Length: 269
Image 1 (cartoon, rainbow, N blue to C red):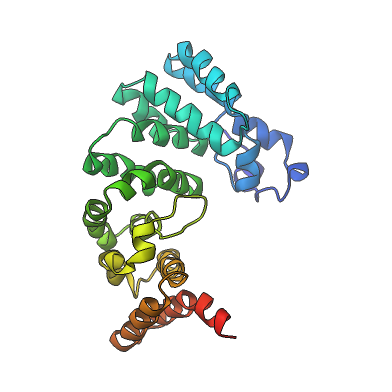
Image 2 (image 1 turned 180 degrees about the vertical axis):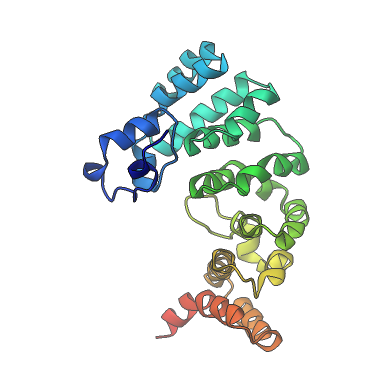
């Protein structure tokens, strides 16, 4: 049993504030990280050794370790990617990834996401495989799945739009959010989509169904998508916002429009 004070903790604000007991549970894969501070402090090699031992795959530990140490500038993000991709290249068994996908540790689920992203050449199959990660309860996994799939979607942009459009009607706000966030024109720490920077109109099948979404999580992504587009195509964004304002007088739409136009309004001051 995990103690209540561990389960109900607030995430540490700094590395110095991180409870060593919490770190022990994180490195043992028994709890999820609460925030980025905790996530950055997980000893991924220690956790990996435990997970591989538990699943009977200890033989790949050396390969994963070598891949990590070969990096010029290793970071928590790059280690997650390297471990996942090394796993993905060495282990194909679906049962292994089913265990990892259901693991308590969000870090382990991130590895599984990177690994499974390597197993599908077809974009449709890739997105089906990524869907559980896009719907994951943990914020970190939901970000990693974007890193693991965005570049592939950019190469087949129209197909990606077509495949993700049905996700905008999902009852799961995480999937609705992924449909927009994963294809933001600029985004954060991901590759820019030049096609959307030149012609954001192509993204409207993903945006329009969500213009009055009940979830703030989704509305923020729609607004951020439009704000990204406003940096290269301000006229188009202004026109779209005027149209939406006429079509919907909901407070949800008003929230999106205000945030979508924030860069344009800032430049106008």
